[in-house]
Structures are given as C-alpha cells and as structure tokens.
Image (cartoon, rainbow, N blue to C red):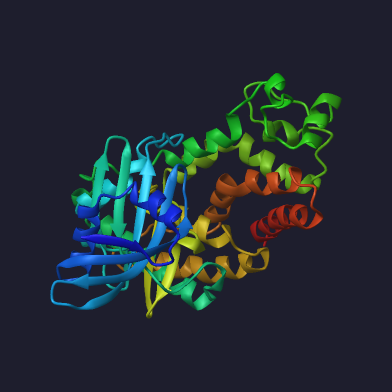
Amino acid sequence: MTYKTGDGVYQEYYEFMKHVQPKILTHVLSKLLGRAVIHVDYQTKQLQGGTLGDVRLVTGVAETTDGSNLPYKVVWKKQKKWERPGDLNSWRREYDLYQSNLGTAFITALRWPECHYAEIRDNDMEIWMEYIDGVSGCDLTIEMLEQATWELGRFQGRIAKRQDEFKSISCLGDEGFLEREFNQWHTQSFTYDFLISEPCRMPGFLKKMLKDGDIQLVESKSFEYGCLRSRGCDIPDHLKQMLIDIDDQKDEIFDMLKGLPIVLCHRDFWNENIFYSGGEIRVIDWDTAGWGFLGEDMASLIVDGMDVGRFEENYRRLVPVYLKGVSEYTKLPPIDENFILTMILIKFGYRMMQQYMFSKDPEEKNQGVNALQKIYEMRNV
C-alpha cells in the first residue's frame, strides 16, 4: 500500500502520518467506501483544535481492488489526556460514548457524526468520523436554530423517557457540573504576587490597576469578583449589581435549579457545533455531554458566539420551541422561562465582564458591556 500527499507538502504528510497507523487508515476508508482500498492520496485541512486536541479534514482519492478511484472526506480527531476542571474524563468521553448505546437515542432529524473507527492508546484518543457539511456558526438562520432547538428538546425528552436505560452509561458527566463550573469562575483565587508577576498573562494595564489599588482582591474569591467591587471597575452600577446578586444569591439559585427536570445535556451546544445539513440537524463535539438541568443547552445557544442583536430574538423564539420539544415525550412541571436568563449569567456573566474589563479595544469592550446590558433588559421585561 502506498500513500502520497495530494499537494506535495511532505512536512504536512510527515506530521500527520506519524500519528496514523496505515492499517487504520485503510480500514477506515474501506469501511467508509464499502470496498477494499489499496492506494491513497490525501491532503489535510485543520478544522479546529480543543485543549491538547487536533482535528483535521482528510480528503483525497482512494484506489480500490476493483480499479475504482473514489473521492472521500473523513474527519480525524486526536485528543491527548488532560483534566478538565470539574470533569476529569472529558478528554476520552467521545470514545466512550461511541462504545455505548447512546447512538440508539438519535434519529435522522438530529444525530451525531457516524464513527468509522475509535481507539484509546496510552493517553491518546483517536477517532475517525463522518465529515459533516452544511450551514453552521453565524450563518444559521433563526429558522434553522428553531429546528435545532426543537430536535434537541425532543432528543432530551426521548432520553428522559428512557432515563433508567441511559443512566447506565457511566462515562456521562453528572448534574453537578454547572455548579462546579460556576464555583471555578467565582471562587478560584490567585495571589496578588502571581497576578502582578511576569508569568501571569493578564494585560499589563490590569496589573498596574492592582498595584495602584484600583482593583483589590477579595480573599478566597476570584479576580473578577474583586474587580466588580473595586473602584477601578467602571461597568455601569446596575450591571455590576446584577452580577453581584448572582454571587450573593448562588445558594438560593442552585436550590431553585435543582428543582428542574434532569436531562442529558450536550453542554457545548453553540452555533459552531450545530450543522444544518440537507434539512436535518447534526451536532458535533460531545466530549462534555452529561446529565444536567433542563435549559442548560439553551443558555449556551442563545448567547454563545452570537451577536448581541440576536439575543432577544433567540430567547423569545427558541425557548418555547425547546420546551415544547421536550414535552412531546415527557411531562414538564409549570416553568418560569426566566430561569434560562439566570443560567446565562451563571455560565457567561463573568466572561462578558472580562470582555469589557480585559480589553483596551473600544469595540471589544462595547461588546462585553452591551451583552450584559441586553441580558439586564431581557430579565427586566
């Protein structure tokens, strides 16, 4: 069997092939094409990379034993072992989920990419999977988002109806993830000496504000917490108070959230992981999937990666569709939809504040404060 680079870039060939066993590539393409493969040429394109991850689109032509030359597209994903705070096994979760029975919960209208091959070697995960082509990211229209939302709700409703069956999937994250994530943002602390030191990559103007006393740290609390309560924070007072209230009322908030139905969340359900393909929905990157509260995925979809001008329409149109989709399969208790806005602040409030506080670019600063202002307005309608 021979391998050639489609573009003659041998360094790329070497860097890619040193990770790939030839027999695996042969197996993958033979399975994908339904014929035995004897020769391959290819080129690769970086798609994205997570933490210690490498994701590439591999394309080319495969020659088969019957003399056919067949074009192909396939995605190769490699993930090194790492420990995500609050979710230590997420680095290998996609591999584990593909070995489980979760695939039986999908239908044609919404599914994940088909897996052609998956393996764990030492501390590396490798997956060869279907390439999903379609509309994604900011190009998704509100109608496409409604369809994705509807199908997500139905997916979660179907699983809730069969929860005893899927609870046996041991690799899924647990419902405590959202609270752990919140605590990492709100209680993680660094010392003053570290924050002003050379190894700390915080912008220099913020280090100066610390030295000058314009920002003062609060013991056992995060840097952002201290910023909010310091004279150097010039975010409008009503927005500061909105974030402070989330901190001060966190116990009551999570007690309320714990009264919501538990569903299987994707937990990275934003527009870059959603594809509208041939009238159907495809969702990629399931490495943070786990049990969580109804609406967690909606909190992400409404604002993550979205222009502020889309927040209100997303909330107004998507939340009712989502709840209706879930309730098609399982009965929901009476719900005040505003809890999703609180979830948005739990997940993204400090990130929006950081965008304002950590940047000197006026446009980027405005995006952060405008996002907070829009959430404030939506909560007070």
